[in-house]
Amino acid sequence: MSRTRLYLFDTTLRDGAQTSGVDFSVEDKRQIALALDDLGLDYVEGGWPGANPTDTAFFAAPPKLKRAVFTAFGMTKRAGISADNDPSLAPILSAGAGAGCLVGKAWDYQVDVALGIPREENLSCIRESMAAVAARGKEAMLDAEHFFDGYKANPGYALAALEAAFEGGARWAVLCDTNGGTLPSEVFRIVREVTRRFPGERLGIHTHNDTENAVANTLAAVEAGVCQVQGTLNGLGERCGNANILSLIATLALKEPYRSTLETGIDGAALKRLVEISRLLDEILNRAPNRHQPYVGASAFAHKGGLHASAVQKDPRTYEHIQPELVGNTRKILVSDQAGRSNVLNRLDQIGIAYDAADARVKRLLDAVKEREFLGYAYEAADASFELLARRALGQVPDYFTVQSYRVLVERRFNARGEQVTVSEATVKTEVHGRAIHSVGEGNGPVDALDDALRKDLGDYSRALEDLRLVDYKVRILTSGTEAVTRVLIESADGEGNRWSTVGVSPNIVDASFEALADSITYKLMRDGHGAA
Image (cartoon, rainbow, N blue to C red):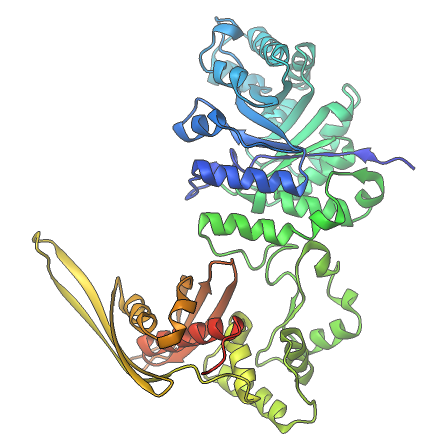
């Protein structure tokens, strides 16, 4: 049985750039576009040339994509002037892109209020703009803004907007749930009605996540017949985000009825790179990955309860809907105070630690985990600290350095320009290979200063730590009062994109931070294969 071809359109570089706190550089855009092309997407929307300096510069030297159609976004021409004389449309028409996707109004209310022009004139703008894009030899697409609201208010006019686009030579008309308020049942019903007028192989879907239904709405539209789906990496987008293209790719490739009835350009090898692509975006944005993101999150296939872990080991399908390896992820058996012996043994297997199940040290390790979690440690969120705890229990951690003492000073003073500043200074005394080392460091705060001082001189190990950096720091007060116990979680990363988390617990926040910091450095040295000299 032949399968229907479904086309994947990524709009991370335009819709994703509208996310609060996201600001792509030209190089960021180039790197993401190449990664999306390599993954196998059909269209990569690069942004809106002429709208801002970054997008204009990006389109001035477009990335050389091997497969995906590089797409320029813009808006239909303004009323009262021709498409050839519209200065806002000109950059899209002249852009070095194989397609042009133009937003046009499909809701009569928006035409009346936002544009303030006759409804027929709006249809003429759509028609002439599509014709102008097609005349340049580009693939023309209409981004039918507010389509679902428009269809519910006036189906005839919403369909007329699509008709105008096709009359102008549009290859695609994309149905947009612009405010994200439409629900899956509505999407299915409306798209099904639209496909009675226009063929599904000419229709696309673009959804927002304001009711947390963006992926569900997209799948509903696919089931109703559309053949192009739009989304963004990790669901980036304005307000609550867009449909997550990674979740869509995985679902379409692995779930029925999509797997057997639809075909995308994503093969099995590319599917295994979904985690890598997700992390690449987070790395570019300098954001901590969403551990609970479906398919690609670090906790997507994590099991904490002892009974769950035991069941998963016997039959993974009990608590896992797919094999994690299919999308480049891994199963994680978390170790916590809810863990049983099987959790610990399974985690040791995953880490690759050799052990004898009858070894009394394994039992002591489980007891230590439960005791330390009672004190406030959280190993389910600190994988590196757990590995160090386990290897230390089994005598497998080299003795890299010993901290003899440390001290932190925080000074608030006036600088040479008369400005009041706060400076932290840390002094750390260590012993490395029998040699006493005394280092002093400065930083924006006590932890930053300690990190600077500790890594400033660790003898032969200093060079191995040059690419180590702290990327996240979390503090939680576990008990109240003047003697409150504090837990600190530190996430670290290196130049190869590896990330790991460590934990420290103490009534003193600086002491807890230093414990997590020292674990991070030790783990980095151990993971990179450095032995104690």
